[in-house]
Amino acid sequence: MDIVTAQEMYEWDRVTIEDVGIDGAILMDSAGRAVADDMASHIEKRDKIVVLIGAGNNGGDGFVIARTLLNRGYDVEAWQVVPDEKIKGDAAKHRSLFLASGYELHSCKEVGEVKPSLEKADVIIDAMLGIGVRGGLREPIADIVQEANAQKARRMSVDLPTGVPADETDEQITAFHADKTTIVAAPKMSAFLEKTSSYYGKWNVVEIGLPSPKLPDPRRQVWTEADVKRTLPRRDRNAHKGSHGKGLIVGGSTVMPGSVAMSARASLRSGAGLITIATVESAIPSIAPFIQEATFVGLGEKEGFACRPAPSSLSDYDGIAFGMGIGRQEPTRSLLSEILQEADTPLLIDADGLYELPLDLMQKREAPTILTPHPGEFAQLTGKSISDVLARPFSLSRTFAQAYGVHLVLKGPSTIITSPDGEQRVDVSGNAGLAKGGSGDVLSGMLVAMIMQHDSMMDALANGCVLHGKTAERLTSDDHSMIDLLASDVVEGLPITFRAFS
Ligand SMILES: NC(=O)C1=CN([C@@H]2O[C@H](COP(=O)(O)OP(=O)(O)OC[C@H]3O[C@@H](n4cnc5c(N)ncnc54)[C@H](OP(=O)(O)O)[C@@H]3O)[C@@H](O)[C@H]2O)[C@@H](O)CC1
Ligand SMILES: [K+]
Image 1 (cartoon, helix red, strand yellow):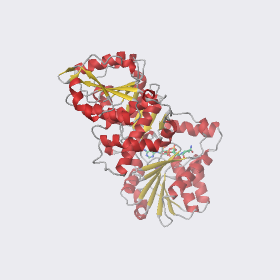
Image 2: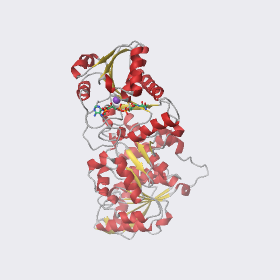
Image 3: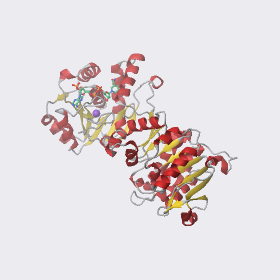
Image 4: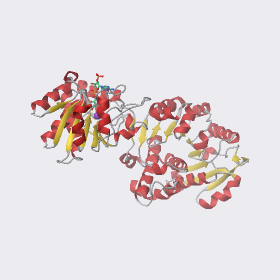
């Protein structure tokens, strides 16, 4: 499922109308009818429905939706919240069709006129503004949004909640707070951003008749369960332990010995053939009983933290993860520098490994490098503030991944995975149960296993993220709550997820 910016959506409309020749008013009719069909499945015939209609094409969709629902016998009051002369083009055409069909159109210049209807409504449909919003809301729309947000009615938005821009934004916004949004054709970026996603409520996308083969590829998509099922490698009957990769997990310290064990276990539960843990010599006896399937390499240590030299024969491994519980001390960072220069296999760097990362060495690597920061770690890597990262995760990820030639997994409620050439995939699985210590260690372990089994790095990373999130979702819907779920529960929940997906 592609994710678009406003500009990309306008280009899709242009291609459809100008290049393919589908009439704009017909397209609007298809869009409005598709949205009406979707909303009708959430509305009862006895519900009092108010449709709020703005001046642009979002309002045009609103005229089609109101007419379609009235044709089907729903109890609808249509309210135009802008002066007649503002309505132009295809929207004006659908306004005429609405009136010519014999339906009543109310209009208001200020919120007081529509307020009694909003108070009586069971459902408020917002077709005031879509991707064309610019700047803060003007009156009377600002007041109407506030009034609608204060009602008990179910709020449903067409394409976007009014006031939410399609794209990344630094601005503070006031917006319609939808319980449900029916998105037209493709989700817009703002559905995945911290500041704006909550305004959408539950959302889904309706198909409106755009010609897929002709639409420019935004190179940004939601990675769905179906995508995982399609791309997850199948196991060959003749496989042996070497077929699925030898992985090396470098991490841990005397004060944090457990995280490497968790990563290793997650890696093995995700199909890695063999896993070696490289950790400080003194921690091995305490870790080993918890992970009988792994082999160990002892690292030299200074005051409990790992130091050079790196494990010999790094090239024997098919994938390496570095950083979990390793600490941020200088000797540890020298160890990473050595590994960055010597490892000619995919290298994933997480957690403490991301601290003061030598970016120049990363740029020089020929084998893939994968970084898995959360927003705080990414802010430190880019020199931005966390709020900048949360406001512009798509653009900052793309710029960074392209500049340093890395695969970036920017973790969050919407995890954004970016390739060195700027392709992006978004994983929306998971829940607040994952916001715990150890979740990142589990994900890193899973990703190393995925990298070793997939031919495509992007498939590996996106599949690993979705399988991680889906496991948490399943566990919190069955035996656990988001409060008690532990990272180790996720590891032990992996078998059922893999059975469901493969
Ligand atoms: N091609 C098609 O037919 C298809 C179109 N589609 C639909 O069209 C939508 C995009 O339509 P759009 O481009 O007309 O923009 P839209 O969001 O309606 O807003 C423009 C109006 O808002 C006004 N306005 C702006 N900012 C404002 C503010 N802060 N406060 C108050 N007013 C403000 C602005 O006024 P102006 O600034 O021009 O005076 C103008 O009148 C899209 O989301 C989808 O629903 C799809 O169905 C696919 C097919
Ligand atoms: K809207």
